[in-house]
Amino acid sequence: MNQSQTSELQGQRKKLTGAQKREHEVPTMEEFDSEDSGVQDVGPQINGLVGQILETTSALLVRIRQKLLEMALLICVILLVFWVASFLYGSFYYSFMPTDNFITPVYFYRTDCPSPHHSVCSFPVANVSLLKNGKHQVMTYGQPYQITLELEMPESPANQELGMFLVKMTPYSKAGQIVDVSARSAMLHYHSSLLQALGTVVFSPMLLTGASEQKQPVIVELYSEFKDDSYKPTVGAVIEIHSQHIQIYRAHLYIFAQFTGIRYLMYHLPLISALIGVMSNFAFLSLIIVLSFLQFNLGSHRNPGKAVKIQEEKNESDDLNDQSEPQNKENVDAMECNSVEVEESIPDMGVEESDDDSREVAEDEPICEAGDGEMIL
Image 1: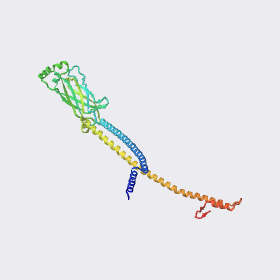
Image 2 (image 1 turned 90 degrees about the vertical axis):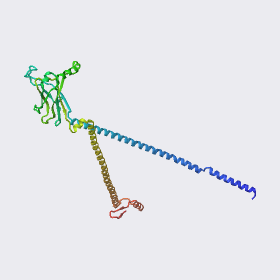
Image 3 (image 1 turned 90 degrees about the horizontal axis):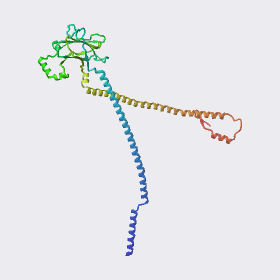
Image 4 (image 1 turned 180 degrees about the horizontal axis):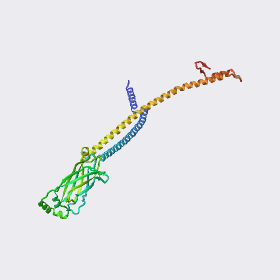
């Protein structure tokens, strides 16, 4: 081969390689179609994904709303139960705890006394009512009470010379019956003349201005543990001082309840007792509500079983009706066939029909089966 031929062959080879490269570089129509189809397939997928996101979000919002409603209902129920528990404890405290203390003034008087230093003067007497506001009893049955009389007596020579005197208390019932009698002795504290003079000098400014007085409080404990009788409830008491020359500024009767047991804890530890009582009532009421809720749920679970049983019985009755319908249909067909036989048995008295017409009628007539399985034309 000469050089010209070899050069031509090389040129053709270069053209072929260039064409092949162009074929690989330039995309075909199929590739364009596949890319378009891929783009078209991405659109529905995005729409479906967006729809799923929206559905999930809506379902999540519905669940959040339901949970919030359940929490609000639970909080309302808890507050209601707590209020009922507090009300029950308050009612129990009001009915169980008696009056802790009662203070009333005592006004003494004398009868048949022409002069203070007369020997015919009667003893100072006072009639005290033991009813709160004139209606309710102060003391509760079975509860021990401490009853104390406080006397404010001046440090006068008459009281100093009086010495020991007797204080008597006689409680009585509504019918005037005497419930009990108590008598206690009392006297002024001894102060020497020198001590009285020094006290007068030291407290002279207060004594001159009236801020202080020369007096002594004398406390007489009449009862340490007085218990009221349920058959004869105490409504009042007569207090008498067995001394004709006693001098008294004023007097007060104090009644203090001596609590024991639960009442002692409820009176001296009110906050702790209230907390324990309210929480106990709250736990008891919560237990009742939980048991009622569980019983309601069990009842609701049992009712669907009954409903299913009723539905099954209904379905069975429907099946029986469906089975009876074909039998009724067969009976109707048999009745139609019998009517056709009766019509054929009647002879034609009028127009005579041709053979072709009779053949057509025979072809159109239905084929019926007799009760014994014979074919009836």
